Picture (tube, rainbow, N blue to C red):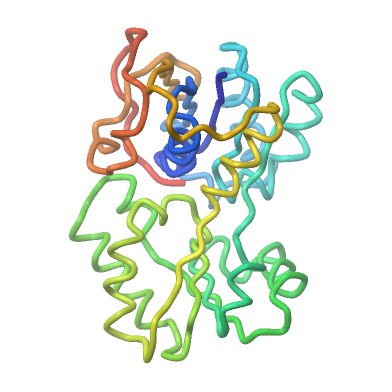
Length: 269
């Protein structure tokens, strides 16, 4: 079984690790876009085109399914990706976990400044928020800091976002896939500002489970680790970016069984 993932940068690590937790024997194709990141400020048609270029590079490896491990690309590129690749290659998008978060009480949606306040995010809150009080929190610089594995900048960005999060918040939606890589830091900063416990809601686990369903594979966490890893940077064969190794998720990836070129340059989704 081979599963491909695309994103502008390291945000795809969370979903890739989630796939490997369910199937340690799965092969992975990771396709990112260091030449074009960040995607957030780009025009929707440009985002769709860059996502499609990443997807085509991954599709050449003949995966069984493709995960769009990026909220921005899912918003602006999913129709184009599905039109170009399905039904031969099933395409799975990423949607912020607003619905399950709303069951816990007051919600905060942490997202990039480009996504915060967008019609797409507000529609999700309206349709799936169940009328629960929901605050949109722009996380200035957090995705970029995660992409660089800059611990000092990550802490500062998390602290600033936590200060904008209402004290009675009981659930935080991680509206950018990069944020799941620093969930522990986010919890620490929220603990200092909230009046009670909080639950973080990411999308990686749900997306990984959906990927297995689409290929008709059962979860088997006890399977012997194996598989191959193939990495592309803006369509070029590449190594895993050095910043990725700062995150525990990278340790769950298959060993790089096929030689690659220079690592991808840092950036953000």
